[in-house]
Length: 168
Image (cartoon, rainbow, N blue to C red; front, side, top):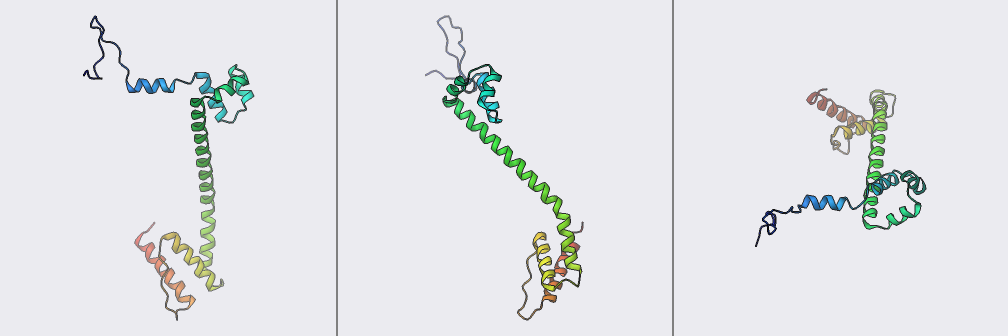
């Protein structure tokens, strides 16, 4: 049996070109014409079929015929998924940016709640709890007879010792 790596020879012993997996893949990709690929790109961006047809110089019927082809449908599915992923990625980035803008305000409100003795102890405890969660600290286990002030002091002590261990 001949090796697939060796090109087959013709009767005059001239090696014939062999097909490589990369060539098959390129041929598979090239099943769609440049016009079809451009149509997929434009449709994937949300351009209406009529406008795509005009831009490419084909009829709307041609686009409909292409849309029935398996390769065209697969490419459309892929480009829609990519577009969806891009929208999700942009939305998540926007949300993160908005949250980042709110963090300094939230920290100043929490700082006020922690440092202002006029604020009710339960609200100060809640503020300390939030800081503890953000800092990754565990909520201290209070004995049943412990009052709100001592819980607050424990949180503040834990927060202070955490800052001493991890400055900056």
